[in-house]
Amino acid sequence: MNTETEKTSFGAEGHPDENQLLLALERELSPEETAQVEKHLGNCWSCRARSSEMQSGILAFVEYREKRYLPSLEPPPHESQTRANPSGGQAGFGEASGGS
Ligand SMILES: [Zn+2]
Image 1 (cartoon, helix red, strand yellow):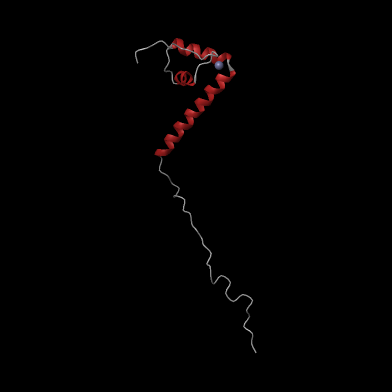
Image 2: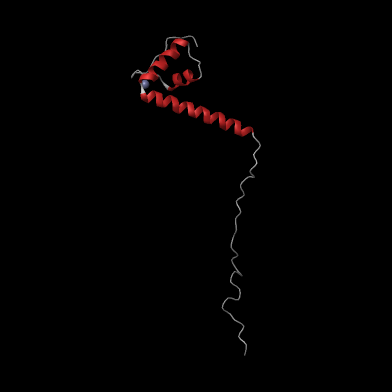
């Protein structure tokens, strides 16, 4: 809230953390910070992969949210438990009515 000490503090290895990647994707960072992140993404494959992964994750989330508002046409899955009759399954099998 009151401390603004962390200014684009890329991690110990010099990579932006996922929060910064997310903020950069959402254009929530300042132009300078966004430029730093994007510059890093241009040089760092792993961070670029993470960024695109997060982006697709966001897209999936948005699609999922939109689909939730659509009326579900599919009926809920019924688990029809067809139990076999314990008795009377094989009535009269092999017992041919033997005539005399
Ligand atoms: Zn990186």
